[in-house]
Structures are given as structure tokens and as C-alpha cells.
Length: 561
Image (cartoon, rainbow, N blue to C red; front, side, top):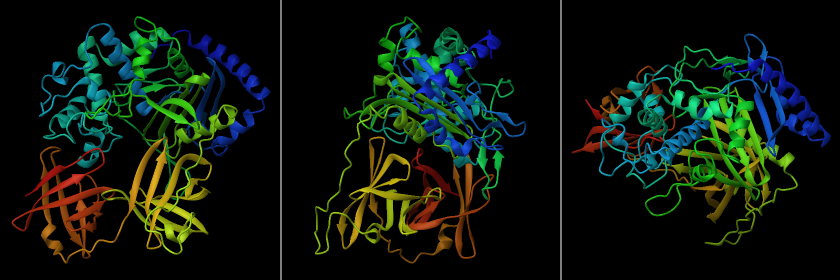
């Protein structure tokens, strides 16, 4: 990392921040902003750096909590964080700069730059990769299924060979949107092929250097030192203190960018007045274009940017997370207002916090969108009414096969349990049959379709995206000999063996490098393990294979040995 005039720059920024804090305090809102982070402004507690941008100026820049618990180093606006998937927008900008230079075309097939990558039935293009419509399986999920810890160092060739070993795609390219870190890992490789240099060097020469982002880099070698770097932490299971999440991960593309508040301000402002490449707003406009699916509908994902709305205001954003790092860069372009939050604790939710900041500082611009009151419209009963009783909403709702949320009554109110990660939280009624998490109105839980005195649907609305969850009925499981499932199952695609064993009358799975874990039967020949669905397949009545569905990896085949 370069040190160009760093001492003088930090001195000037320190004075500027003091002036900015004064400006914000004049409108009597700094206390309200600080309250959002109050729980983190403590000794021996990780926290976050916050930057608030208005009309091109950093009107608020502050650190909350500790960046290095071993040395009691506080977080400041100069602290450097891993930004996770916020990195992806730097990759797409690099791709568009190369397109501007005539060195690639977005509709080029991947094999033009990576000729050893397998061909599938339908061509795969750079554009598919950018918009997450390729169907290529996610390498972080594949590594987890292989029994590899994402905190460990992974060689580029190892990951690339793993992606290349996938015999099938999750779906035909262009048919769906499904987030895949593999795509951006490979886009970084394509940048290197097209530019003739690493994405780290290309970004420094074409983006970070020209903008003066002296503390930002694609970190592709974990032996390199990073000045002012903060470390990441997770809460201990007993709630007393924190564990250090030591990360040797140094792959770039899917993530990999380290940066700070001051540098991300410069990046944010370039979206209003582009100084990179040939200049002008053409490349900026393109960054906001959403990809199209084969059916002509939007994929909902632009060039590593999410176009959204919040209480009637347009937003452009992207978050990131890995280890204990959490990040959000959210822009309200029509208000010339941005929120940048970089955190170093795994329980941080910088997206929700960004909305809280907007509630405080954009309160005069926000337009409260009317809450939808869900009324019973089908199969009325004599006791039907507009608002349902709590007991009528209690139950288990299925997001997808093997992924459920349980709604219960706790302390006189509704409580949600995400069964895939055991995260639990209360929800409170806002209007009609709509519920929200207290102090977080970015997610709504809407119950509907009363039948037999039970609601049959739960609609989860998050940032404009709706997910309909059907009430899950108990499955009538046939009597099955559990011994039939026992054995070793091998996947050539990830080169791993899963052992299905039985202990104390229960089935367990032994994944490489992990302790045996219980698998719960959810249907005939279907089991659930830590959010992963196991589907056993039979030939002539005998179990011959196992297919695994794990979110960003579908239909991964294991053959019984």
C-alpha cells in the first residue's frame, strides 16, 4: 500500500472531520446518530467506522469501539477494513474500463479468456457472470461442502479447478438470478487476462491511484502488511467477550478489497462526476443497468449494485461480509447523500443501521409508504376478521425445501426462529397483519390466507423483494429402514466422501474435517443437515446416490460406494 503524503493527508482530514462534526452538531442530530452505535462505544468491544456524506462532503466521520482488542487500538475513520462483497463493484468497474479500452466485450464467452473452462449446453458470457445469472455454482459453498474453512488460505488454482470440476450448472444461463462468488472470482481472472496485469495492479493504476484512494487495495497476498488494519471478531457463545476470527483468506474478485471511510468517500463521489477512464457519466450509467433474464425480466442486480428504494427514496447500495467483517455503502443519489459503515463484529447489521441513519438525517425527505393491510379473501369462516389472533399465525413456514422459519408466541408476542441458523428475534405488530423487528422497519412479515383458523402464508418483504412462505404441514413419513442409508458417498465434483452413520438410533453425516452431525428426516428419502438438504435416490429400490442442495449449490451428486 502506498504512503503518498499520508501524514499530511491524515492531519488535514482530522481537522476536516472536526469541522464536519461541528457542522452536524449544529443541526442537533449527532446525538441521535451516536445512539445507533451506543452499544459499541465501550472498552473491549469491537464496533464500526461510520461515514456520512452530504453534497460531496464528509459531514460525519467517526469510529465506535475497538479495532484491535489485543492492543486496545480504537476504530477511527482512517481504520482499514475488509469490505467483503462491496469489492464486487470495483471488479465490474474494471471490466467496463477494459470494455471502454476495447479489450473485451460483455457478450464474449468466458472461454475467450479462460479457454480451459468447460463448455455447457448454453454459452456462458461475461454479462452472465456480472449479473449472477450464469448458474455457475458458488465456490465458497462448494468449499464448505468439501469441509474447507473459508478463513483458511486457498490457492487460486485450487479454487479454479474446483469450479471447473462441476459437471452441471445450477440452471441454464440466463434463466434465473442466483448469487455466485465464483463468477466474480473468475471475472478478476478475466481482468488479468484482458489487461495483462493483476486486478490489484490494474485497479491501483486505473482507479485507486487516480482517485487518491491511498488506503485501498485488492489484497491478494496475506503476507503483505496493511497499515491501520482492524481485526474481525465474533461473540463468544456464552455472550462474554469475543473471539478473534483470524482470516488468511486472500482471494480477490468475490471480495478482497480493503479500504476505509475516507477512501470510500472518494469512490462514492466519483459516481456523481466520473474522472476515470475516458471520463463522463456513460460508464456510471452503465454501472446501474440491471441484467435481463431470458424471459426479458430484470435480474434485480446491476453491475454489483442494487437499485432499490427506501421509504420512497431511490437507493443504490451493496453490502459485504466475511469472517467478522461487515460493510455497507449506501447512496441516496437524488439527495446527494450516502452512508458508509464498516464493522468488525459478526453480529453487525450495517444495512439496517444505514436505514436508521437515513431516518435521522433524511427525515424531511422520506415518504412513508403505506403498510399493506392483509385481509382475509378466501375461504371465510364465521370467526374471520381483518386482524388475526396471534395463535392463528403460530406455526412453521417453509421458505424453500429444508429451509424453515418457526413462528411462536413468547412473552405475549410473536417470535421468529430461523431454523437454518437458530437466529431468534421478536416481531411486533405495526398495522393489520404486518409485523416488523423492533427498531428495524426494513423487513416486514405479513400473514395472510386464513384457513381452518390458521394463516397459510407468510410473506417476507425485504428492501422491496418479496418471499412467500407457505405453512408447512407435517409430513406423513413412511416406515423406513434407516440402515438402508448407511454408507460412504463420493462426489467427484468436490472430491469428497460423506459418511452416513447411525448413532443412538439416529442418522448422522460425517463431512471431511468436521465432527459427525445429526441429519433430520423431513420427507421420504429427504433429510436436513445444518440448512443443507440431502435427497437420497434409489435404483431398483436400493439407495444408489445422494443429491445435495445447499443454497447457491444445487443438485450436487454423491455416488454410494
